[in-house]
Image (tube, rainbow, N blue to C red; front, top):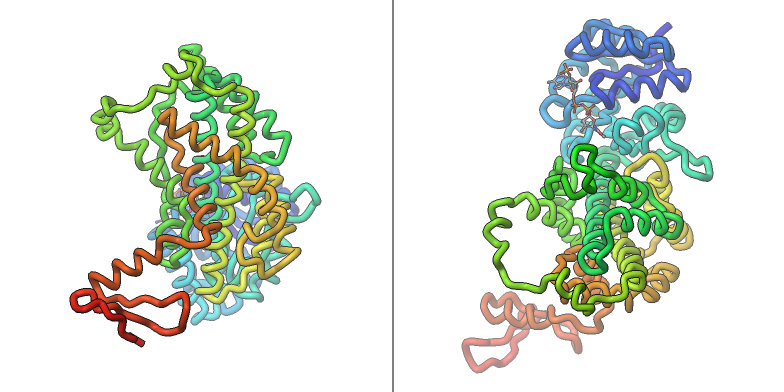
Length: 482
Ligand code: NDP
């Protein structure tokens, strides 16, 4: 019979999603630019379900039930446009094109607009969970029209991950680029989470003197508490792993230069445009960039500073177990700040583009399948359920209390890091954000004074309405500039 959905682009993600759909009883049409991949998939997994392999674009489209659901799983960017150009002329009004690649949301907005003129629904769907998630249940963030959401929703719910309470980890995020925007911020938050974990590891090693195996145990313990998450779990696995060739800790034989594919950078670029302070994500992107500057680092090794090892040997270091507890507090508090910033960015995107995104639902669909899945996300959903117009996660009473209880230890950890010369850009940027929000007065008043001095940019006053300018070059009287 005709296929319920077709997938073009059968590399690892497309193949696994096709198998996932088939396992849930859907008939799946298969297509790939290079036919050998289609044949290989049929050869290896053709028995798993109902597949309809197609050799040509025409054959592929003809095998789809109407309205057609055509999913693209090719390289993001130019290749996605090329595939859309190839297939759009073969489709009819009411058909759907679903792009499950890591597209930039501005591209998704453009493609949605162009295809809408032809009556075709374009669904930019963020998919998280890597290849394992694609096969066994990813977190899926689809944008696009309400009609396409109704036609696709049940299928996406079927193949998505399920949270502990059984709820599917997918929901209609909002119009046009909303899904890919939320996926982008998801990845930005993932960068921040990873950076904070890396800093915790670095401190436990350099300040407390623990070995990687011991740190793996500490992370395992943390994973039974409020930090329970996929990233903490795999951190313990990586730290406990021994390199087969050298017998040394795996983490000691890997080159310490972190790479990136770009979604974290996009998050920060867009945050700058929206004027949203996502300092935690930005520091995480910069930390990866810094690690990769091998020449700069080699040329800087002689720079003066404390040596954590020497301090420890002299007995000046903190009690290791007590310090580990403090690091857990600092990690948790910084994580709250990262999510506060990330959700602020989603809110700002939603306001700017008119997406009307339900922030509590976003946290709910990240509870399973995706890389940042964590017990913690239940609390975010609860915070938005209690108050849907929450101005910031930090205004939620429970988060405010938790971060308040953690803040003494958080400060102690940042102080210890500074004293021992261990870089903690994530922990300290999070703390600076927290203290800036708390501040009664910020030095921004001085900044405004400087701007008025050199550029006559004017300022407002605390005591009356209006816009003012001081005649700095003259007698320094104040004039109304409004
Ligand atoms: P790749 O990103 O490596 O893309 C390979 C696929 O793209 C192949 O099927 C290839 O066809 C096809 N392709 C490339 N250029 C063209 C073109 N010009 N015209 C037609 N087809 C083309 O595959 P992945 O499975 O890793 O990822 C697919 C998408 O999913 C990407 O957008 C990726 O960013 C996204 N994604 C990936 C995740 C992951 O963990 N890998 C996680 C979440 C999303 P051919 O065989 O003919 O070369």
